[in-house]
Length: 312
Image (cartoon, rainbow, N blue to C red; front, side, top):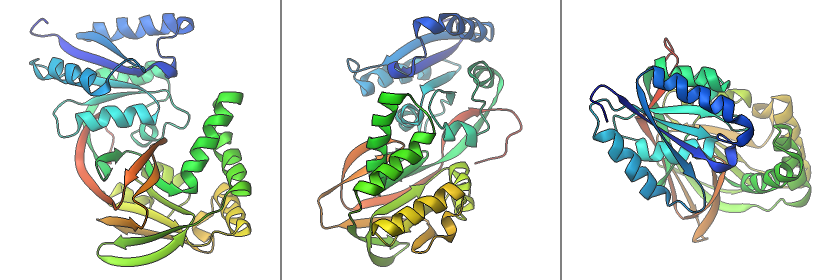
């Protein structure tokens, strides 16, 4: 690599269609645009045949060996961003974002354009901003982590997406479908900054993205913006109460729903008699060992954002 050339590595999910045949013209325009800004580009595809940790070790070595650290670009939905961010935390290599998901909350919270060409311009000409990253055991989440009914929403939403295409409406239709069929409670003990609360709940939700929490009209949005853990616990599990909660969510009045409690903390622990719980982490389902330990790693990740954006 030439001494004054900056490395740019693109990590993209095969499912995102970033390099699909019908998008070849746009793909080539991006490559040409970044080259004009002095980047030497390599593309790495995420698929079932690639071992992600090995691939990222190659990517990190490429950037760390360069005088200019360049940018590692995550092209995909929030699950792809999560995987790349986990590898880049606590390094001096910034992450660029090409948002290709359904909601793109991470990009939107950082004022990164949803338009691919404009997002590419931010990667080339923007500023580096340090952002907070929330952690749960050995995983991270940029958006949210949840357990109970929410992982069931994710499974159902993916079925809707596969059959009908990806639309934001499916987040609500899948939620209604699950609520009509499933309403079991989890028996948990939630410890918030040292104070322990036994609870039987169908849903616990933790947010790290103030934009998503604001869209849900939750008062704890500012909590996430300030680098603290933001959580919501639903205390009733009968079907009627849950349907009322979903209606309040659609109306943007979830904070007014009865038996919905929000909290803000530095440290949270969730205990359960079960050895493992299914947790939805940035839209990906994981089986995680209990107890679940939550914390915030402040200013742990560098991200390319538009110039003159306030800190997150």
